[in-house]
Length: 244
Length: 317
Ligand SMILES: Cc1cc2nc3c(=O)[nH]c(=O)nc-3n(C[C@H](O)[C@H](O)[C@H](O)COP(=O)(O)OP(=O)(O)OC[C@H]3O[C@@H](n4cnc5c(N)ncnc54)[C@H](O)[C@@H]3O)c2cc1C
Ligand SMILES: Nc1ncnc2c1ncn2[C@@H]1O[C@H](COP(=O)(O)O)[C@@H](O)[C@H]1O
Image (cartoon, rainbow over all chains, first blue to last red; front, side):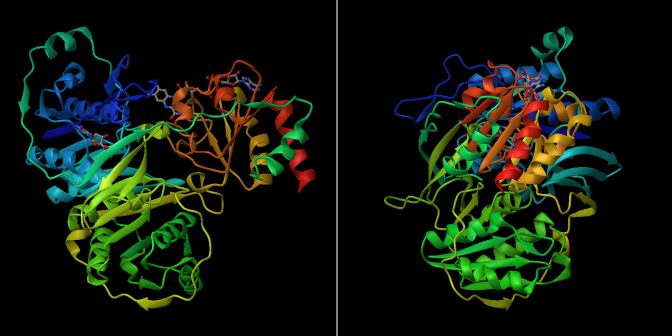
C-alpha cells in the first residue's frame, strides 16, 4: 500500500504572532516551526499502518520553501520513507490543494491534518478529494482498514458519526487517531539520507489574494471581583458587559 | 448580485449559524436565495424569509436527510448554476466547510473560510478571515467572478430585515457516484445546548479535581442555558467527552460569555476562546495566566465560588 501524508510547516502553538513589512509578512523572528499538530497525528497513523502491513510505504509531501526542510526531515526521522517538497510559498488553500493533487495520484491513502494551524482553513483535504475525484473525510478520530474498505469515526458538532468508504481516499486526521511519535536516534540518523525530492510547482492563477494581516485589538485590563462579592459579578455581566 | 445561502438544519430546525449566513448575504446587498436539503419543518422554511431570503429552495429528497458531503456539494453547485448565483454563503461547520471547499473547486470560485466580517467592496472584494487560531486576521481579495464564503460564528448579527419568502420545491437528480461514503451511525448529544453554537459556555479544567465534581458546573450551565466545555487534559484523562475539549486542538467557541473554572489559561486553550465577547475566570491562583485574557476575574476556590455564582444568577433571574 502507498500512503501520502501532507504536512504543513507551522509556528509552534505557543508562538507570539507578529507581522512585518507593513503587516504583509509573517514575522519569523524567534519563532520555532513544527509539523502541524494535526498533521503529526496523520503521520503517526500512517506509520502505524506501515508497521501493521508489510510492503507499505509512506511518503510525506510539503508545499513550502527551502526553510521547511528541517520539518520534512523530522517527518522522515519519525518513519516516513521519502519526501517531496513542492518549492513554493503556500499562500492559498486552492494553490496548495492543486500541488498536492498533482503528486497525489496513485496513492491508496492520502492523510492530512484536519486543519493547518496557521491559515486554519480546514479545506485542503476536501479540495484534494474533489480534484482527484476521491472521497474525502474530516475530521477523522479513528481509521481502520478492512481490505479496500475504510471504517472511520468522524467528529461532528456535539458528537460523532461512524463512516465507511473505500480506498483510495483522502482523510483529515485529529486525535485520538494515533499517538504522536517522537523520532529516535536511529530515525534521526537515517532521515539524513532518505530521498527528498524538490519539485517546482504547477502554475495556478491565484484567485484569493492576500492584502494584509491584522492583529486583534489588545484586551482591556481584567476587572477583579472579590470572592465574597459574587453577586457583584452577576450585576456587572448584566449591566456593564450586557451578556446575561 | 445573487447570493445562494446553504441552510443547515438540526432535528428539522434551522441552525442559528445559518441564519447568520442569511443575514450576512442580505447585508451584502442584492438578491438572497436560501437552500435547504433534506427534512425540515414547513414553518422553519417560511421563517427564513424574515431574515432576508426572498426565495427558499427545499430539496426534500429523503436521500438528502443524511449530510453526505459529496452529494451536498453537487446539489449546491447545480443550484448555483440554476439560480445564476455569484456567491455561495454558508456557516463553517463539520458539514458546511468541506461542502463549500468542494463547490469552490467545482465552480472555479474564489474561496475563503473563517470569514468574520462583511466584504469591503471599495476596491475588489476583500474579506477578513480569522487565522492563526484566532490570534490574527488576514484580508483577502476574492478575485474570481464567483465566490464561496464560509463564515465563522458571529460574522453577522441575526436580525429580521426581510419579509415573506416563497418556498419552492427544488427537484434534484442525484448521482450514485456521489454516495462515496456511507454514514453507518451517528451519536449526537440531543436536547442539550451544543458547544460550537452556544451563547454561553461554562468550562472546567484540571482544577476541578475529578469528574465527580462536574455537578456544580452542570448546575451553573443549566441555570445559564449554557453548554459545558473543558480543557484538553480533562478530556484526555476521560473526565469529559472529547467533543467538549476547547482550544487549539479542540472546539473553537465564540460565545457571548465564556466562564473558565480551574483552567490555567495555556496559550493553546486561549486559542479556542479568544473570539468570546466576554471572559470570566475563576481560579484559586492569582498568577494564573488566564486572568490576563479575562474581562472579569475572581481569585478563589471553585468549590466555594461556583455554587455561590449559580445562586446569585438564580436570584437575579
Ligand atoms: C500541541 C498542543 C496542543 C494543545 N491543545 C490544547 C487545547 O486545544 N486545549 C487545551 O485546553 N489545552 C491544550 N493543550 C494543553 C495546554 O498546554 C495545557 O496543558 C492545558 O490547557 C492545561 O489544562 P488545565 O488548565 O485544565 O490544567 P492545569 O494547567 O493543571 O491548570 C489547572 C488550574 O486550576 C487551578 N485550580 C486548581 N484547583 C483549583 C480550585 N479548587 N479552584 C479554582 N482553581 C483551581 C490551578 O490554579 C490551575 O491554574 C495543548 C498542548 C499542546 C502541546
Ligand atoms: N503547505 C502545505 N503543504 C502540505 N500540506 C499542507 C500544506 N498546508 C496544508 N496542508 C495539509 O492540509 C491540511 C488542512 O490544511 P488547511 O486546509 O490549510 O487547514 C493540513 O492539516 C495539512 O495536512
